[in-house]
Image (cartoon, rainbow over all chains, first blue to last red; front, side, top):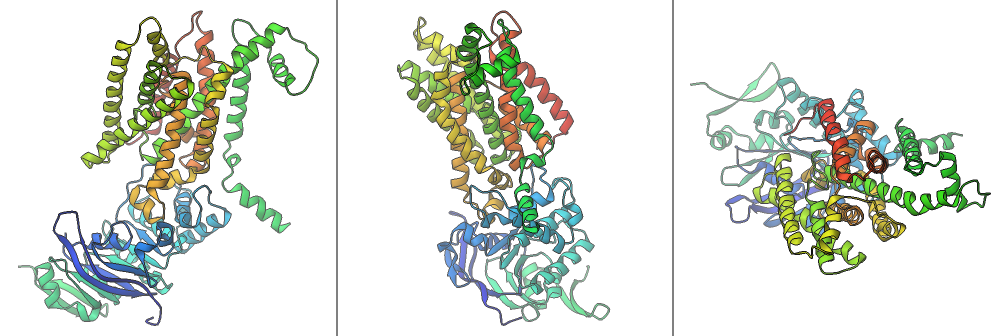
Length: 263
Length: 349
């Protein structure tokens, strides 16, 4: 897994809104194909802001982001979109496009401004629906399906986009317990398919389950990054979340879990 | 055989005839257009009307009177063409505005584009400018209006449907007031009549010169919008998602707003402000063709043209005197829109 090229790298990244306080600074990490990077941190620590910077939506104040060694700010939106796919946290659809019409929109970076999607683009969309196992939703209006199904459709759209890197903003929020776990498994299988995945999450257990790399943003906007099993300590999590966190090995599921005592 | 099959499949993926309604809608539009040449105080048979039209291309024996030919070519054909162009332009731009502003409640008139363009045209008349001057000023004022309308939600940092609609009402109100001032200062003998003619929305005096004066600009804008229609889907997802799909938002949306505003301004130049068409027809087209703009936008164009031809034909035949077009579009459009809202059970946020 570790021998892939570095797909995404951020060096000494810092961000603040106009005259507002610093959201994060001195953030550095890199990601190879097949790796998952979980961004953890308390509410308001700037997880989503960092993800939006990586998605080329906000410009970094300082530092730079490299895509396959090239500085992102030198690339056009279209070029970036061929490298990075983005799954937003929530969507607010106005028009009920069919799921297939929605997924084919992932082909946008490969279709020139005055063109319509071609047969091969629809074929790629159909393959993506198949990979996600949601062919049955193909002709359903995107506005009529559940939140979990909508997320799957959005991931299918990202697969149709054929990026190297997939960014996911809190993919498990607003999902029930079962769907959260299914999403985590699905993220692992995306990594096994060779995508580099960056996701934000509120649940350190998810980072433990994925057992890959992690970056913890604290309230001051500084990041501790590294392997999940090294970075995620009781001490760090307790100080970041301001609760007494215990990491316990649970034999029944054969993994560590984050727990806390009720007073 | 295999290759041929694949090839035909490749073509059919986006093809308009995949929608069962497109050919019927085109046929109805054609019938309506020919019908409008026949009805009126001086009745002409449909066969005669078609023959008169074709006689200009294919030489054939005359089975009609010179009066008939005069009525068709001098009066009804230019009117029909102007009506079709205005209806098609307003509906096409309405569909595009609804898509790119992510808002099914907007239209050229609700965004203030029509009243802006009207003010521009009125100023041009006051300044004594000719046809091109009227078109250019109408376009500039129309663009100004749409910029103002979209500015308010940005200032309020509130992108909801309601704020954009409210903003359109404010801008329309403002341009309405400007229009009032212009009418107040206009010379009641000459200019006032001409300006009032614009605001009423009438194409009674339409001639071929009107058609040709706006046709080039309209055709270019319409072709660009038709070619970019898939991108309307992308923009309707919202700015963030469209950006991460590699869309250069500012350029693409700018070009679309420009083209839609050109269409609206040109329509205003030849017919004044005509309400409802640009709101109702895009909804009707989505009901028939589905929300995908690859299909819905061409539908909107054809249906808008047919709708306006029907409206204009009614306006000149229902009563002895000519009815202003806006009255007829409102009469048909308002109840139709109410019916569609209940039918779609539209959720408005």
